[in-house]
Length: 77
Image: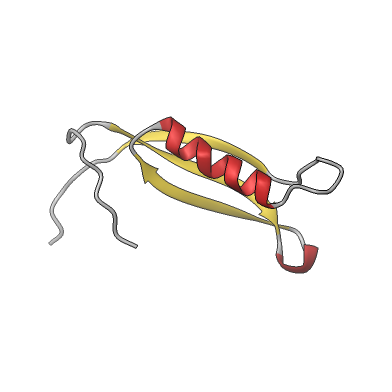
């Protein structure tokens, strides 16, 4: 899905990295979502997946973090 983020050419971008349970409980899957223009937007995705997999006892098997970077823009040849 395409998105438009208004930002300076050298502005930092953020992504959410989450580890969630695999299909039918087999292992784990690492998900990468973004880029986002603020750390809060990426953190919201980590929170979403944590809440989505929350167990009845209040624990969650999800771990997550927010990463940041700078995009290097260039022309495709």
